[in-house]
Length: 321
Image (tube, rainbow, N blue to C red; front, side, top):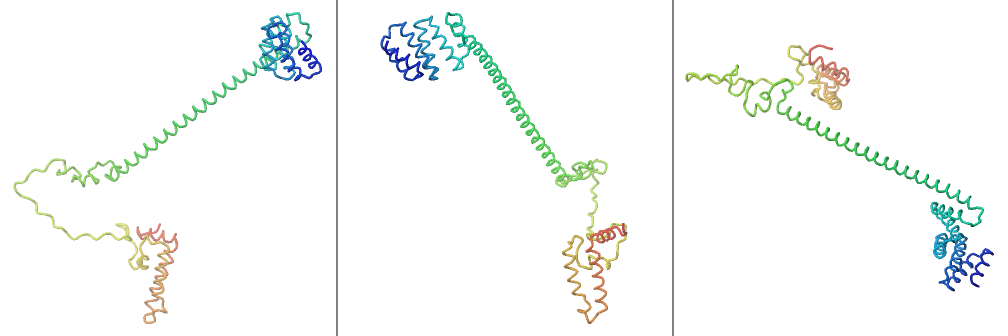
């Protein structure tokens, strides 16, 4: 009893740690006395509440109620501990039991209402958390679906590009085998016809698609191979049109081709200008002067892009555009 009284004294003086130790020592004095231990457990629960040891207070109150079921103080203190650990439904149940008992506590109604409000607030918060989690899951699924659709579309585009590339390669191969395919002609006009020996109307066929009849032992004499025709010049005018004279061909004057660049044209001009300069040809100044003049005229025409274009057209078709 002395330990219990010392604990009560310390509790009244708000020395909760010393009170908690005294109550613990008092429990070892008579552990088989349920009525005495129930009171000590309830008082130690009060000290634990003051020390914010809520789990310990709940255990002490539960042990007190086990030894003495009608211990209203232990029920009330456990309800307050349940509120602190956010177990509001258990706190409400204990508060309602205490409210029906004869314990005269003026704050029991207020604490019961606060516990119910806290329970509703927690339920709303849980519902909001569940809603947020559900929306987050939906957004995650939608994002995965968009990524999957994007990946499928990308694969589809890649397949389409591969198909077009294959078609392009097939057209290139067909064009290489038969360059006349775009005009509607068959393979007898292309490289395949040369490889197989097929003519315009088929291998060994007549002009009308029939096999030539066998003659009576007579064979036509072989054709005489005539002289080969000279290849047309690159600067030759169009057939049927009259171009400038050979002496007036500026490309021949400078000794270059029509594909010559500006650097090549300038280099040829400097070389010929140095060669036909009148000061360098004192023996035949008249002839050198004419050639020097012709070289300057050719260079002035071919060094200008617009004049060169007009000259090439005239050289090709025989008249200016």
